[in-house]
Length: 145
Image 1: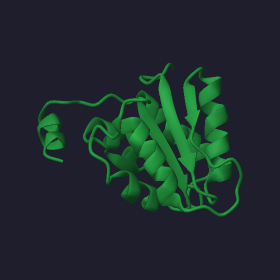
Image 2: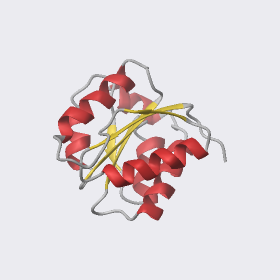
Image 3: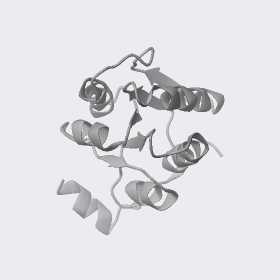
Image 4: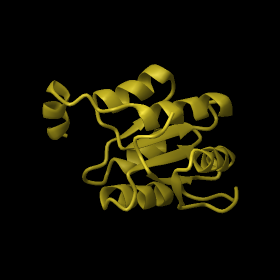
């Protein structure tokens, strides 16, 4: 299955570092260009700094979408959503991931490394990459955000 997106910006905090690395390798295997915005190791960092990097890349169209990973996904999503044109969603199962794209046209997915096993996280990334926005009545609502 090929992706709807060609270029993905990716970042994490220290809690999400190992999962971020797994996602990076997964995306590269799928021949998707990855912009790894850090961190480069699992030393303690502040998640808002990395959410801002991905938020800037996606909002300025330097990447098609973004993926953020922290302990729960919540802090990353809250931080990324401060940017205009960003719709970051915490994705915790296939339904929440699919609906974030179909109904909300999410352009950043946030994952919780402490709450999501690697195999499931990679499945969720695949769902996010391959789910189209439905538009229609949803477009009207997304425009109000």
